[in-house]
Length: 478
Ligand SMILES: [Zn+2]
Image 1 (cartoon, rainbow, N blue to C red):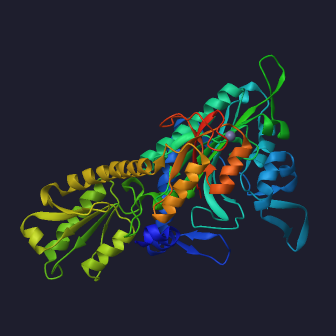
Image 2 (cartoon, rainbow, N blue to C red):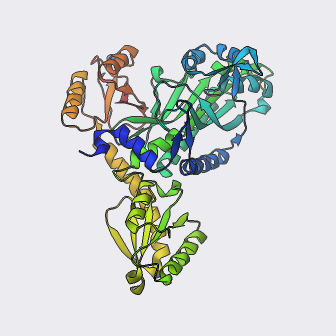
């Protein structure tokens, strides 16, 4: 059995290290993003940022240190976050009068400021996003997926009423879905979180959920309708058109560098990283082969191809180092570079080159006249192909015929015996927290979300057999 299926987390960590994406630091759970992983983040950022601005949002920046008293103002919020907060208690050699938390998220600081910024209905809506780092002191860490410090964006908006705020919550969720499917080629289910999985302080939480290659789920983005909870806690009121003081309705929404981990776990293979062309730091690598050093025409031709691809805005690298071609092939495959072009003396004689897509087994020969067009087309096709492959994998590992907890237990035993992945289970849920808890205790399956468009509708609760209120995705999750 391969390492990937045998020990997925070892495969994941090895893949990250071989691709030179991160380094560990002496601070537990805090990783350094090396240039390749940071550039992947920059491509995600660029697309998200464009979508946020198209929908009327602007970026701002808020302080990283948050006074303890701010957390006390919203009861659910402090309960949810206090176990994972790191604190600053001392500065300039003196103990602080009030300790300061390194932000886990910024609803409190922003709520405090919005109460000053918002006075009248004319000030609304407030549509702001922040790109920042946040801290959540995690017991068990995994690069990108769960780290003590991570990078993210957090949107914070304020609206005149519930209707407008809920519309915003849904709009941002659908932007997340489009970007994750379009740019990262990761299919997701959008839906609503059950109350026990809600964001601390939210009225409703919605999420997009993605299936990794070991069958576990990653929550890839969340959007929260916060009602007037934070408005009441921080006294964010406006004068409405009837001259009455009214609480605003707020939302918040976020995606993080977790998305990088998801890309690795969804597309990676035995040979290493496989990057969707749209986010790959290097999209095309050009490699001279055969006795190319004695034949300057080879590198001249590759220089020409390099310039033409660059002019088209394609991120291209020419590897004319003195390593062997085999070594280079392996190296660039580890890094997940989408397309490789090989050119040797015989190819040049025949006016052709060999092209290899990272996710396909066969090399194809392409004419040198049309090599630029072939590369452009292949990058596009690979982007689509990766999404289709990930969809097929998800369908294969989604189980929609498991009706009872006994059947789920049997399914898990069988998948352990046969060394297959347990995948996700679509099942009914009566709405009772206790049923969710029992399922979690017995199987480690948690509710992922109540999908808006489930493949089929379920009628009986997986645990108690009573009438189901919801059809839910259950899975083990990161
Ligand atoms: Zn039940």
